[in-house]
Image (cartoon, rainbow, N blue to C red):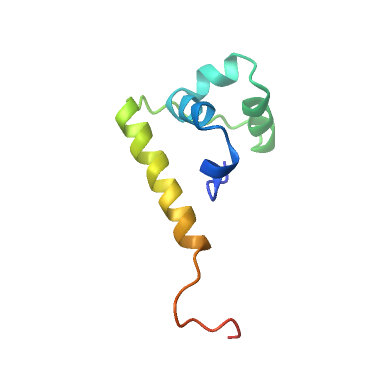
Length: 80
């Protein structure tokens, strides 16, 4: 799954469910999970048995990294 900006492009509740229990979300017939499964050559996202606090921390980290990547760096020149 491409993580850049995923917290802005996916529903927060769905994303938390998918990170916590991707196997169950896929088995439920969820269309987004099914598309991701097909897109990534039928390699399932592993269930890492993350707790709610871990899921929240991971999604917060992904969100922070996405924002940092999108933010322009001060003093950086566009032409290099």
